[in-house]
Length: 591
Image (cartoon, rainbow, N blue to C red):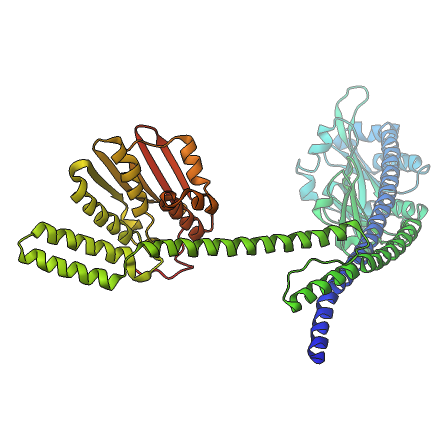
């Protein structure tokens, strides 16, 4: 016995420990989730700050270089304007074709070079007359595409600009540097200042050394300068591989390649794209914020551990105490109230709820015992009203034989009906029968009553086929029919009708009713019948037993008091309706 008690105690301890383990695991999960969330948050905050820092630096660098290049190209454009107004250049442009010789061309070249002495970075200046005669400062360093020069395609944009500067690449395509280096070209249509007649085109090529110098001066070694045609121009060629046509936009485009943040900007009105590659350094990491977050995380974890200890001490341990007391009640086989003292009102509330449940269970047990006693008494009363079956059957057969010998056929038929009635009535002692057999009992009973009362009775049956095999308590319709005859139709003193109905509701409940056209019942009578008790029956004698006993047996059978409804109008009708649940899953029905 001691060993069994120790085993039970161990089982109790295991049950007690489950809540503590669950709470411990819960807090571990919470701490883990918070720690992971913290790390993820720090990572994303750090990466976001790095990216924002890189974007800001890229924006400053690109805008600074863009403004520098735009400003320089504007200065070179002003120099190109001075060149167009030089007297020797104008003489070259105004001369007739047959009068243009090397002297005029060289004079124009010298005039250009004198102006360029004040400005570094110009690789070459070309003055192209309308008849395609060229005066260039560095003619031998270029290869000319004479076929393309004859077309209008390369000069169309320059002509449309009406003398304004047009910036292109590589001499607008009519000439290439022999060493393969690239240039930025400022092109202008030249008009005679007196006649306003177009006399030629000026192309000023700016060397990439100018942009390389700007990059060095601004310390921008992570920028690559690319032409909008995809050609490398200047800067860090390592980043040229990141060029994409998507960067041909006057808005800065940012793209993360994993290793670098590539920022691209096309300079407004210039066929040049600036690509800047930024690495994600630690300069922008908000260490102060991260330190604060770490401190808050440590405080949270300490608070979490404290809350866990508090819950264990003040909740789970008292719950274990309650569980142990309940287990002792279980082992003792008694439903007793708990008397343990609880430290908090909520736990005391739990103990009181358990005690209230125990009190309610005990009340239910007492009620069930009382109902079982009532059912047994009702069955005993029914049995007391019955006759011993073998003696009754033998007697009816003997009387029927004598009736046949005497030629009394009606007497024989009456005895046969009475025998059928009692066979179904007794039902071999069954407590539950089908609606089919219950209705047959009523038919036999009314057939016997008609022998006595004649045409005063008419019976109507409205029985749905799907209810024929529905199980119901035995002998619930016959007492109602008997009550209709003796307390309804007979007292009215005229022909009456009894209607038996059976229908299946959508809820699976059968609606079984007996309706008569008797004298009816008052509201007080209906209320009294429905609310009668066993004590009232004892005081009022047997007259009230039939109807009350039937209602009570159906209530006990269904386990519900709300199974009957009585509808009546005095002087016109009375209808008693039963609502019976399908109990086939709980009982075995004999069909």
